[in-house]
Image 1: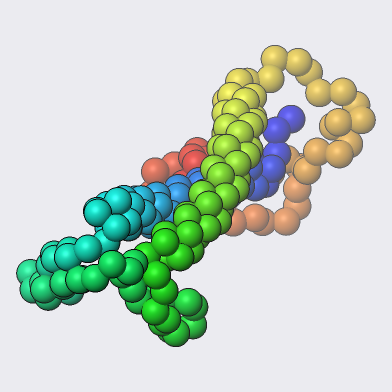
Image 2: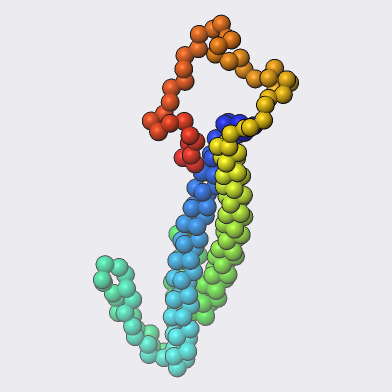
Length: 184
């Protein structure tokens, strides 16, 4: 016979796995946004490096809220970019070095995304397995038993209300009955 506690435990497991899957997918979306930003940075640095050896380049750099600052680079040498080196420390690096740093970061972030995708796939498989087990047990619980109890099973069963001398209060029912759902 299916135990209600086992069914509730499976329902809780399904809910925990759903939350974990949602969290992992949210992280994947955040990592995808960061990867996209790195792709734009890399493309911009490629364009700067490819422009006639870096001579006389001018552009506007957005700083937010619709405001941009003019930027001009003149001369034969490669331009300089400010690069976040970590822990809020910025350093001046040539465009080619800034491109290399961006490429390394992008590779590291892509590795992180791949790990998150593996976690997502594993969690999704566990969720599917737990949900199927829950559904199978719920179906077993719904089906009436047509077999007569064996003597050993009758001894293990709790005494019926007619044979029990103690007065038991009836169990309170929930607002929608006592059927378990995945929300229980």
